[in-house]
Amino acid sequence: MDNLSLRLKDVREAGVYRLGCRLDELDAAVLEADCVLFEVDLTGIEGKEKFIAAIAQAVCVPNWFGRNWDALADTLRDLSWQPSCGYVLLLRNDNGTLGMAAEDHNIAMEIFADTVAFWKSQDKPFWVFFC
Picture 1 (cartoon, one colour):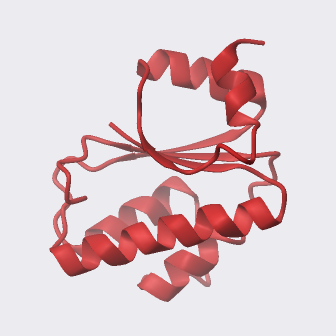
Picture 2 (spheres, rainbow, N blue to C red):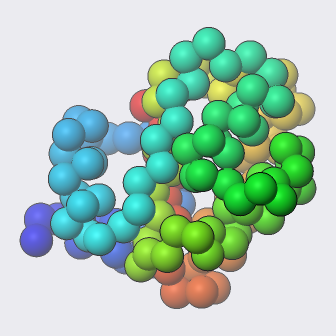
């Protein structure tokens, strides 16, 4: 098992990062680590509604999804319909703002940090990568 796949399994290292490898290397490591990869293309995303919808589509949210910040936070801390030993959320084509105003960007980043912390408490890694 290569170093990246071992690191993806390490709950202590999980967090929010800028991707430091090629996409094909990440794909292979996620597969080898037996994690679930949620990939979101942020090209053309403008505003929180489109951002939330893009993540909802990537994680295949259940019908009860409310399409707001609270629902996104709840969904990312549940994922019972996607059982796995770990999760990777890849946000591609990030322009530094996630396509949103500063306030909404900050809320999204808080949700990601809270999600990582929640999954750490469950002894499962949750990673967010931007590229």
